[in-house]
Every structure is written in structure tokens, then in C-alpha cells.
Length: 294
Image (cartoon, helix red, strand yellow):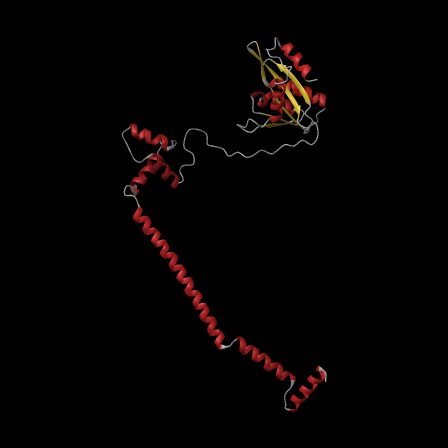
């Protein structure tokens, strides 16, 4: 007999005794519901909740006890010569006065010592001012400025990024200055000239000649240099502004932010044909550099 016929016979027998399928379904649901809400299970759950609550309470009290013990230890170890509240207030009053408000503790304490006064040590002044957030900037010098790393320049083709510098060369007790402009992408020397002085006007003349020969368009070239006077002179900046050349400068106190110009100058000075003696005159220096640039 298959499963279907067995179910049919079972239902037939139950129906003869006054039982039907919906009776069995309702009894099964009630039985399962009784199991879920059985009194014994509910009591166990309540006990578990109480145990968890007791554990949390014990942990909280242990933490509070540890903090109290730490505070007690600190109170026991407090130095006997620590400043009182009035003495601490006096330190703040003196350090914030009109006379000492702009001076650091390294100057306040010696000045008071010259007058025969002693309030606290220099380190104590620093500590109290630091605790009260009064040690940001004290002194006549300019406060330190936060500097960010400049945006990196990248050349992907010629006539996009130039750099320049003007190292001096000695001749009979005076200096000649080589104004040298390099295309960083191709390493081409796009312009050079030697003058007897360092000047923004002279550098502007060389740059105007470069823009004319290379047909530089507006916003096409960035000219990088260090922070020398000719680089930041008003005449040089005006010269760059006319054809639309963007200036770029090295970071303060960073001697290696113009490496391409420095490397070329070193190569030039250590060239075997570089004269061991000073140039005789300005035309002689221009003639030798002209041969070297070919």
C-alpha cells in the first residue's frame, strides 16, 4: 500500500471516531506553543538574565574600586613641595600680565631672578602654562607656519616645464652670472646669457627672447626656480605674466628643489675643458659658454 492510501485509511479511521485532520493540526500547534512558553524554560531565562546583571554589577564595582585605589595611591605619592592653588594662580597672573604676556618662561624666570623674586622654576612655568593652554605662541618672533607639500609638476612633452638659475663664475675678483633656462622634458637649453650682475630685468629679457623663439602660448609653460631675488622680482614676474607663463618656486629652506639646473651647472663646471683660470672678460666668458652649449 502506498503512502497516499495509508493517509487515506488513517483519515478514514479517525473520522469514524469523530476526529478530523483540522483537529490534529490545531493540537499540534497548541503543543508546540506550550513548549515555547513552558514555565521551566521561562524560569531558566530569568535566572540567566539575573546572572548577567550580577556580573555587570560586579564588573562596575571592580572598576570603581580600581579607580579609587589609583586615586589613593596618587594622593599618597603627591610631593610635599607642590604648588598650592594660590601659588599656581600667581604663576598664571604673572605670566599673563602686560609685562610678561609676550615672553616665554625662559625669559620670565631670569627677569624675576634679577629683581630678587622667585615664584616657580622655569619648568613649572612651562607645565602650568601648558595645562592652561597658554603656551601656543609667546615671544616677539613670528609664529611658526604650517607648510604643506607643494603640488608636483610633471612634463609630458617639450615646452611645458622650464627651470632656471644663475650661478656665478669668478673673473679677476668680480662675478659673472650665467642665466640658464632648461626644458626639463627634453633637457634642451632653451636660453642662456651671461651678465655682470644679478637682476630681474636681465632675467626678464632672456625669458622674453625664449617665448618669442619657442612660440610660447598663454598658460603653456611653467617656469620653476628657487627663491632668489631675480626670480621673485617684480620685473621678472611681470615678464612672465605678459606671455602667460606660470611661475613656480622651491620650498623654503629646501636646497634640492631645483635639481636639474644644479646638475647641469655641476656638469658644466667639472667639464674637462672648463678653464682652470678665471675668464679674462665678459666677451671671453660668453664665447666659451657659447661653444659649450653647441
